[in-house]
Image 1 (cartoon, rainbow, N blue to C red):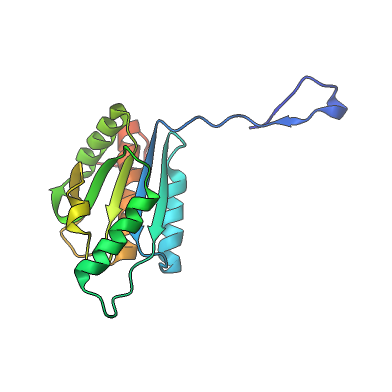
Image 2 (tube, rainbow, N blue to C red; image 1 turned 90 degrees about the vertical axis):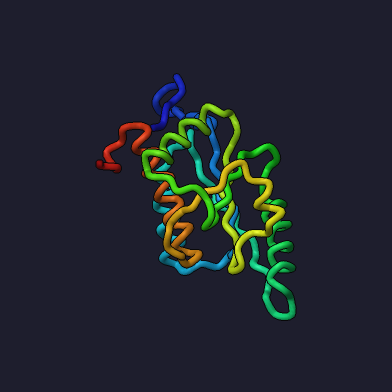
Amino acid sequence: GVQTCALPISRALPVERARPEPIMRLWVAAVGQRQPRWADEAWEEFAKRLPPECHVELKAVKAEPRVGKSAAQCMNLEAARLESVLPKGLRRVVLDERGTRWTTAQLADRLTFWMGDGRDVAFLLGGPDGLDPALKATADETWRLSDLTLPHALARVVLVEALYRAWSLQTGHPYHRE
């Protein structure tokens, strides 16, 4: 909504209402900048559904070209790019096939815990070869998004939808149904 100041009606000017500061900012740091249009549109749809106090932002970094380099070299260069886009002091949740499986209810519980923790949360998604072992070692938590191997674009969409669904469960929003 727009508020107006107390001037005569002919001179009333709209006054912007300040948006609340996020209680917690969620960052998704992912390798791979170009995704299919459907994935970008799906990401945007779920990201905009999250309220300002639980804002999610995507930080996509360039995948290292694989020609003439080992997987380890590529992952190391991608890790440096991921590190460069993240603020300091975040809780780090690495997405990895060896991570902990969470139900939607468990993710909602994690979201509640993270909000009370006072730190923003970064979810790290690797490139074609995964994440550099040294970067994985910096994780506060490791999450297995699915038992399936997902294409990178789809993993981003599943992640942001899962975060939105967990938020909806946590707040009693009707999106999630048991």
